[in-house]
Image 1 (cartoon, rainbow, N blue to C red):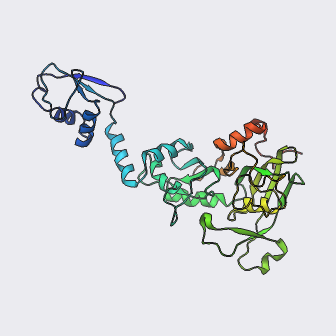
Image 2: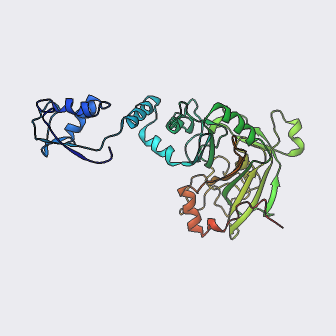
Image 3: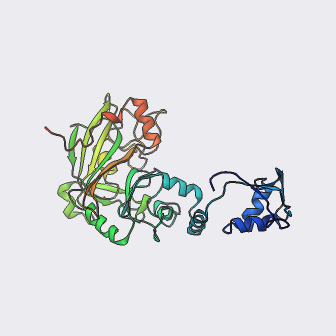
Length: 350
């Protein structure tokens, strides 16, 4: 029921309690909900407040507030059982960029982990319960983003689609383009970073506690646990020599790869407290992982575009995620216009 409804008590409805009358009309309502409506004055008789045990008389008018349908109430009960709050359900549903019977594309907010851990109870994988819609099972993650990184995140709605989409994401045809604001201006303005990555000592397993360090490409084979990693970058515009808007493509998919690579070449990502510390040689005129009081200290790394083959139809799908608020504020403050950026700066004609 989308609006307030006024009902007149007829011959067949007189001489009964208000709560029983309402339950006959809306059997999916709980007694607790009816009591609450009475206490808040939402459920009224002849314009006045009434108790749940008020006896109705023929000719009286009952005011009934907007109520959820039976389907909506059932969905709310399932959501409550799943442990997802109404606020988080509303949040994650507002992040949907695209949805069909096979996949869901989200614009993941910054500050929310993709998956849970021993100290992480609020995460996208858990909130996915609110993305079941008319399916029996929640959608499945097929890749991940760091907690503080925002942008395009894909989920598969069935087990079969998850398997196919995971395979598609490994293909060369899949293209991921990130946007970042970094300290200083990389020179040359476009290039490829090939430092290998290895887990730094004295850090926990996985998640945001994990920290990586770079290994020279010539030494990767001789360093235990090191893996080869390749990232492309291109400068889109600059703020004199103090900062730059860069596009990044992770050719490989190592932990924190883009963050570590940019820090290693002396241009840490703005807001990256883990890899943008004072040990960096190029701090962007002393700004380091921050750019002054006008620029937020949140991570300025965003998964802007994902081009991937649809797991069911085979069609090439293009997903683009708007910048999160803190990055849009930075772009506006620095006069960087997102409409001026090429869709794919790494595949432009000569």
